[in-house]
Length: 123
Image 1 (cartoon, helix red, strand yellow):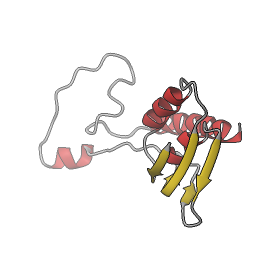
Image 2 (cartoon, one colour):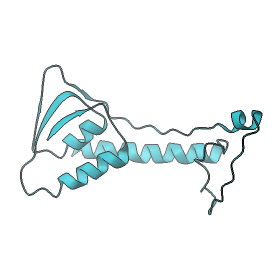
Image 3 (cartoon, helix red, strand yellow):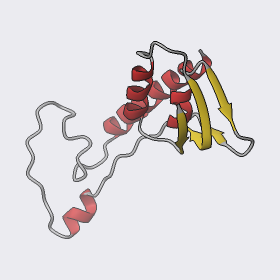
């Protein structure tokens, strides 16, 4: 496995890691210029890991983003018709204002992913 990645999404990294678990052979990882965050994450399932002295690696971290363009949209008369089903269904829509509840949910999810990431690295 050759890794050259500055990171990536949790979902993509997890999908790659799960596919790697299906290999019936030892996995040897070679870290290229960078193996940070998601790149580091997928390397953790390897039997052996090699890196160059100049490889940038590590960066165990997770973040969440919620675009809030609601004030901008309102100031320009932009609106969106959408029909969410469920109390939090529209929380991530860019024209839905960021509420305290949404902020708390995002923080909880990010912390859950971070804890899971650390458990993968620690094992």
